[in-house]
Length: 423
View 1 (cartoon, one colour):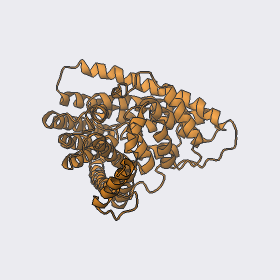
View 2 (tube, one colour; view 1 turned 180 degrees about the horizontal axis):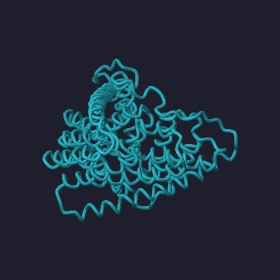
View 3 (cartoon, helix red, strand yellow; view 1 turned 30 degrees about the vertical axis):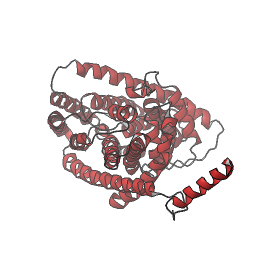
View 4 (cartoon, one colour; view 1 turned 45 degrees about the vertical axis):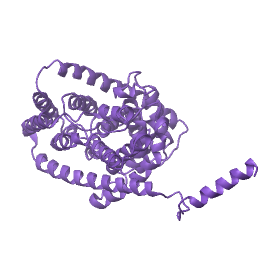
């Protein structure tokens, strides 16, 4: 028997010995795992949001000068939680663990992150719930992977899919949430994690459905933008010009945060005293500028629909930048994406006041996109997220704005772990 015939015989023997497979489609058992993760992510996000609404409602009744002691006490309590339950870390830790710790996110930090962030976000801190949700749902993915003994890219993909499910639940944008979970890991090398894109898509879609059923959030545009139709061929140039100014505000935020971070580091005191000080400062800012209180989920609509003078908008812009910086550096927990959108919206309204002949939606959305892309270095997901959240159908100007903010970002990124690369 010649060699060629022997190879054919071995090949067909192996086919006969192999187990019969009845599924002729791409659909596989892994799909069920990704779907299960999405369902869990949606449930976690829904429960978190309901509790957050309750906390916000209870603490939101305190207004005027009472906001100062309320935020101070909330900061002190959050600091005690972090002190006794352990420091859950910030977005840098999540990125580092995905990239350099084989995709493992430790669930033991979740109680501290959940409890402290509920107090920080619910009392009026200028950080949103996206970071806590990403941490908890991402670590849920790691936990499932550990149970199933997954390793390498499969474990990392499951963690990324968990992150995407948490992010998607809040923003109601499965595609944007999935891309964000890849882009945030490294601004130049998202392709390294492209294997995780399908798991992230599947998990995000199931998370979106469950979260929408539980809290009815994310079923349409979140912010009421005026309608926009491209009437001038220079609209793209306007978007780029506004984005340059928004990127400048991104630099202001980054360096303000770095300055305050060094200042708080010099305070050799326990974390609960730093969060107490941060709460007092945030309370004072919220007393004079009530719109800076909370992360901007509802406040952006108030800002867009309100009738404010240009002088007030300028003061509000810098007050919000300062409030976010204090929240980030004093030990309060949360995410800064929606607060950055608020800063962009404030700048957009200022520009619209100066150039009233330009469509307000174009001014606002361009600035929102540019400042977020400048700080987080996520131009693709920022474009899709804003198109979903604002109902801005013609999203090419948003893409121009996002790319402008991205390319004008500082060489040293705000999320320091984005600087490194795993070789």
